[in-house]
Length: 349
Image 1 (cartoon, rainbow, N blue to C red):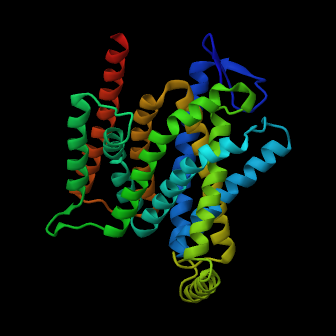
Image 2: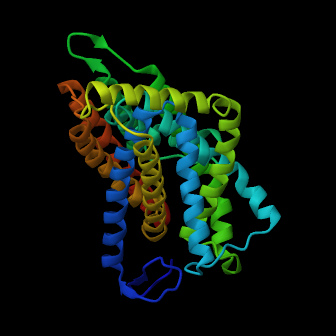
């Protein structure tokens, strides 16, 4: 998506409607926030209903693949023109994208939305460590490293239950941390590859198409995981889920455990649609303003998701959880701002 003299185009592939850049960015953020919130709601509903979480993650990505087929088939967007070597260079990045998505889904299935979001706020910690471990080495400003301590402290406080001491859902924590590491590796290793592909205009790899290709690769990698983990047990899991739901409906037709197979399908498909849309607009926004500004807004987004999902699912957060999440999220935002200031100073020199 190109910006010319303060004017930007809505990412519809035809560059037909020019609007002021500030309006475009506002639209991007609004759609990103709304779709991300609805994704978390429908994703959590689906995960509560059927315990085949890798399969759910795969189905969500398949929805995105079908979306791409429709868009490209109708000529709404230019098809990426990638050679075999391009696909090979992107394959490892797609693997980390798949791991990040799968880890996030499994974390959400194992615990509350708020806890998953709190742990996900630790993503800068993993990104900073990866930046120091994998060449080219990237050293962040001292203030940014100080903010990492604030983030870790906030997450730690959120795990301390009043009157009970430290209480951690290790399964949710482990998968959310796995997702954070995968996201950090994706960002570090994919930066140069995607930039070079986007620079070659003949390949049609704008921000929207970069995400589309990542989604296709993620689906392929996740399918491999499903084959080795849930493929042989999925039918049995589905039958058991439908049977239990039918029994729950007889006891309490209005209860949370009463749902139909169509409800499960709807929640999975809806979560897939919102997942694709929020990522596409987040990619488009990042392409315009850069990763640091995007990271700040991504942090603020977590606050909205935690509040809305807590209301929707009746999740009760005690005082430590609320204070800890606030500290962690604030630390993430100030980390991003410190990184932004460091980048400005580096460019000035």
